[in-house]
Amino acid sequence: MRVFFHHHRHNHRHGSHHNRPPVSCTVQTFVARIIRRCRLTVPLVGAVVSLFMAGNARADLIIPPITESLESAQPIAIVPFGWKGTAAAPPVVIEEIVASDLERSGRFLPMPRQELPAIPTTKEQVNFNDWRLLGANLVIGKTTHLPDGQYGVDFRLFDVFSGKQLTGYQFTASGDNLRTIAHRISDIIYQQLTGERGAFNTRIAYITEVETKARKKRYTLYIADSDGGRAIRVLASSQPLLSPAWAPNGQKLAYVSFEDGTSHVYIHQLAKNVAQRRRRVASFRGINGAPAWSPDGSRLALTLSKDGNAEIYVVVTATGEFTRITRNGAIDTEPAWSPDGKSLVFTSDRSGSPQIYRVPAQGGQAQRLTFEGKYNTCAAFSPDGTRLALIHGNQGAYRIGLLELDTGFLRVLTDTTLDESPSFAPNGSTILYATTDRHGSALAAVSIEGGARYRLAVQRGKVREPAWAPW
Image 1 (cartoon, one colour):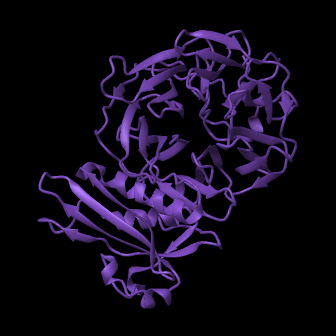
Image 2 (cartoon, helix red, strand yellow):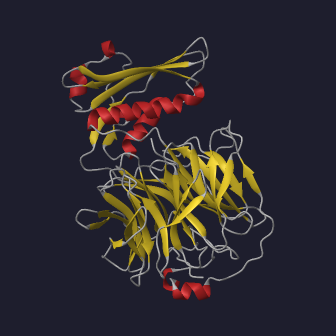
Image 3 (cartoon, one colour):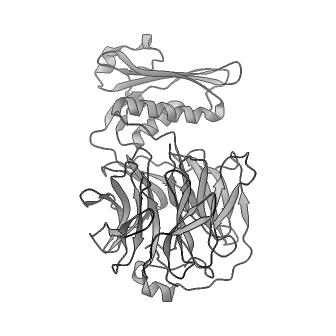
């Protein structure tokens, strides 16, 4: 049985019925060599799988200092919010989250607190003449602990040159939801000043791999805020978990689990009040992998080898009806839907090297899309359908590339050498991916212009397979 493998050390998209994912696969062993060298069987004991309800143990990602911002980044002054309550401080420092959100976008440069001329919390306290000298838009606000235990949050955004308020809102939320309010404020400011919708109040999914004290691997599927905060365990297993994919409504995840020693595709309901939290949708002999949701949420595209070769299939999740999309002697894998649902892109080695192809969603003639270099894999559509993020391999380095579909122009956005699993923010401004560099394993993000970058690191182990949720 032929199996397509990524450049990195583990096969993160699929696996055979009898074998665990290979433990030592490099690009030199791709295709023919990989088949000989990675058919290593490892005895499997019964896997331990744990489901977690929302609100269970958290392990937030760490946000180091921002690596780079865009040259055109706007200065912005986000003043510490006023506080009125019996406690010494609110449970969440909202202005810090807002500043971090806006800085991560690469579009803004929040001013250091020590450079602020004053700490106003109302418009009446603002001396606009002082603030005009800084040339930065101004954000002020306050948080109030209400008698019913809720929190009131009030913020205002000012144009310091005109002295006019650009926007402002009042919110009421529980302490647990103050982070959500902070992200919503970031989205409002971002849209007001850029004209584009923000994506801070969204979630990401990712998988960690940690070695226990008994020297056994522990794989955990997490969901978290877009900045890595409020991380919640969804599923933990002693066997690999791979390829998380968000449903369009953000209420379900599809993923691959090896919990019984073979690969199966599951759909996992994130809501707590459902009778069946997870169910299998593909458990054939051979490869069951690389799930991708259709834009309407009714179907999954998958890689299956149930008919003897790795091909692209589509399954109607409500009925379990499978349709084969590709028919080729090569390896076809890693499907991704176009935003209009009319076509799929996928990776295939039918030309002799792994490249990206496009095929109608109902099947038919496939069209090759990538021609630069001998390694282009793992494509993801931009939300507007005009671009593909992908992994571009060149001279042993694997980096994030951005392909313009109308021109075929491919631009490399990163300078690291072991990038994988690109995923667009729902507004298309940023690409989230996994990487390994001299600092270790991390999630990272790069703007589509290539100028803004940041990292989300883990305290221990490895982190990979990021997926950015829809709005």
